[in-house]
Length: 121
Image 1 (cartoon, rainbow, N blue to C red):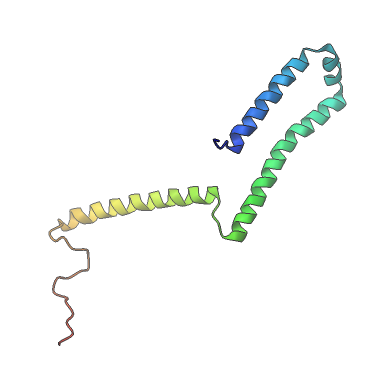
Image 2: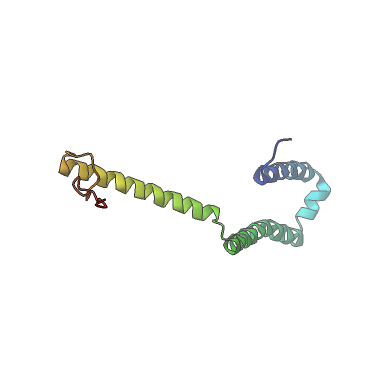
């Protein structure tokens, strides 16, 4: 059995509801009811409720992630961007360092070849 993501399930539900609503709109009885301002007001509140529920779920999931020491998707995305920027900066600095020193030695900067430590035994 294949897993279905919540967002694709939500899209399927929206599609079914939208199709059913379009069929109902062709019914004259429904047209009269929909014309009532009270019904329109209730419908607008119901539509805005979906966004409010999603915002509250996002807020609760961020709180739970913080409680358990987990990173949120936004934090992971920000960290990936930071890592990419740092990698780019390191690559630029390495290329500049390689150009100025001519890379005559294959050693890291600050490493001297005569610095072996012996125990004297």
